[in-house]
Amino acid sequence: MPSACPLLVSRLITGFAALLLSLAVYAEPRLLHSEPSPFGKILVFEDNGERCLNFNSVTDLGRQTCMDIRHPDALVFSYTRMMISALFVHPRPQHILIVGLGGASLQKTLAKLLPEATIDTAEIDPGVARVAKEYFDYRPGPKQRLFLEDGRLFIENAHRTGQQYDMVLLDAFDVDYVPRHLMTVEFLEHVKAILKIDGVVVANTFTNSDLYEQESATYAHVFGPFFNLRQGNRVIVATREALPDPATLKDNARAVKDKLVPFSVDVERELDRYAHIQTQGTAKVIRDPARE
Image (cartoon, rainbow, N blue to C red; front, side):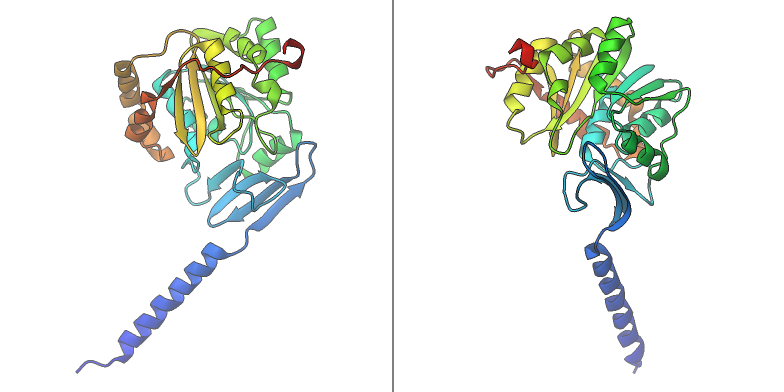
């Protein structure tokens, strides 16, 4: 008859391992960095295997950025995967503008997917820029250009000087929501003006905002029908000209499918979201205060 001791030891080891895992999951976040900012205290912390950036509180579920420490290429948030899926609409952008830096998830991902592309970023907060470099491996350079200024001012100047982009990604948030001056008809008209003929704008917003219907009406007013992607956040994908048809989307998705695997993007799942097209609503559009 075999001894019961090895079985008992095995069960003890298993139980101890489960206890350690439970403690790791429920441990308090470990604060790495904190600094004041005019836009909210900047916090960098590690929690459950992820390094995150947030404003004011580590317990706020609306985190700005999280990076999987063991798999840093994986896109942790569904909204970043939805935004990257805009490559189904324009698979080979060569000149990209991103408004908002955060932990540089979009910047680093697009740089790896499109090594020949030039990626400009407009970030208003120098503190966020320092944190992105020190804690999230963001490396500005000739192809990864950083401009420390308000995104609207950058876009207005780009319009005035005739700059053109294949893709503009809007990912700017303050503590609560998208700054209002980055939501208006007048702002979006500047965005449209700096897009090339086949250009695309991609905007990260919320699904549970009181401004949801007004946002929809505002984007539709400037761009016409747009793709309305939803999971947690809402990502608006609009084009300067007509939206591509389903066959084109599918062909473009197939072309980038293998490249997206290391970034945890499920191409079929993301492609399904493009069945949802938003058209002009009845809500009042959002305008600059002087135009209201």
